[in-house]
Image (cartoon, rainbow, N blue to C red; front, side, top):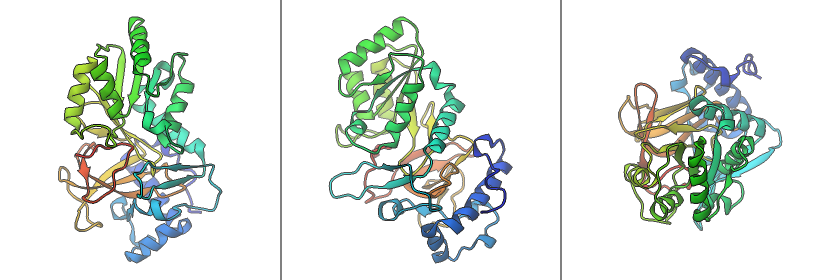
Length: 329
């Protein structure tokens, strides 16, 4: 055990210095206790004594979650989250040793940006996720629904008529509502039941999954804003391999909670980082991933801005489509 790691309460991080200290402690811990990650670092010729700054930490390609059991330590997992995938495509598995850590991460992260979830009526339109097992998104939204103080909170599988009626009742009572849904289902709602939502936050989780013509994010949001009568459409960015989420409140720029950071890497040299504003592969530090791997090189392409916000612009060519948070652009 690396001295000081257990004392690092990541959800209380309040400065860049505290983040860097926690990231380095997590790296040292995972180098020792994660055999897959250690082997990857050694393959790159990186040893703990040479890493002095988080920018020098190697990022494990996300594909390892499809072929290996990426864990730090030997505790038995309390649950296993799995990604969606098309026929014949391998799916990712995230072995979560402590579901309480995941709960604290998504609860604290949501409250950081939106306030207590208890104050929202939570309506979920996530049919493609409810139809399978092992979704980390469903786990999170189920918790939100349970914690909401409104009995009207719940999932709507394919019953858009009932959902539209429920939204109408809540709007008439000026109840603060979170409508979280997969993109294709929200589009169906906006087209079939146009309405004006004044007390509702509309949040898309991405994922067209071949159900409708692929759309760029701006086009999707324009259709949703017009059909649902909202000024902004929010977005959630997360994935099976993470325990934290980023949120976009407007204009497609995602913000991370204090224990999460996104960097852009050079697409030709995975150990080199791109300057702010230049497109590259997105690397994610998620310190809630202490029991698996906190340093992940995703297959997403994007830009990171000087203020730490980031945009998702697409995916690497030939990468399989992940169903959870990204439309193919």
